[in-house]
Length: 352
Image (cartoon, rainbow, N blue to C red):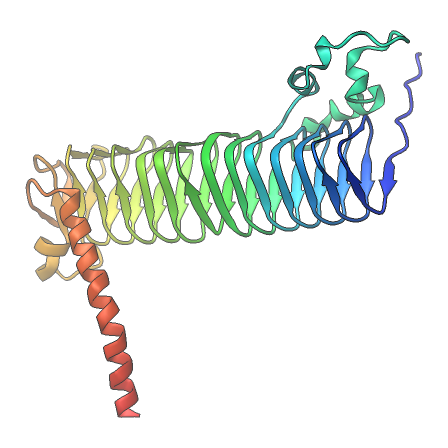
């Protein structure tokens, strides 16, 4: 049987400060890394400190105990960070060796004098064989950070799990689940798995996910989910809201300029307003005003659409209301709370 070449010895240093750096094996830096231009690692990269560079290509697993601050970041396997992740342009995980080689234009380079293939410039053959089994062991393409994640465009093969805020301009693709303390997306967001936020979810464009759960408010353009949509606060949208196989459940109100559809129940603690119609599953129903007294249904527990929806179980139907009407009620409520809290504190102080 042919014997496989042994992997090269890992590159190890106390710190790394260069214009550029390249290694086709594993790299372990015991301190900070500062690369002016490009850093290229064919194996795993472990940094016991902060990582700063213009471009980073890591074909294996990237582990940084401190913060990451780069312009573009490409990772073959998982990304673990003990601090914050700041990427000015594209953050991509799950990159294959062939994709990276094309991205680096190694396939267009002149052949080496010893006849070795161009791929050897990127990754050692033993490392390449080891990496080919990564998907079997799990964690392929995942991102984990104890801080926040901020980038322009995200293309992630696996899960994203953050202790801090998820702040991205556009999520081209997220192949797993997304968990963060808060989720903010300036454009569209395409999440194949579940989306969970400990506070608010704000997506200016269209949001698609398997399920959506927010322990705060949920504000988006359009919202499409295969399963349940749940939030503890209000759900506000500019276009259609749809749960193809589940239910929509909000602690407060639901309002959109488009339509609302759920395969099962639609539940709201206050109003449900959809300017283009409301519909739910035939054997289910619409329950509005579940947290209000019946005397307040018409004002704060209304269900409004061009025509009265079928299967209305609770709430008062009021035709023709707009999302702007609910927004105005919310602003008035916020203003009243801003004045009520100081008044209550003053009364408590007077009573001793």
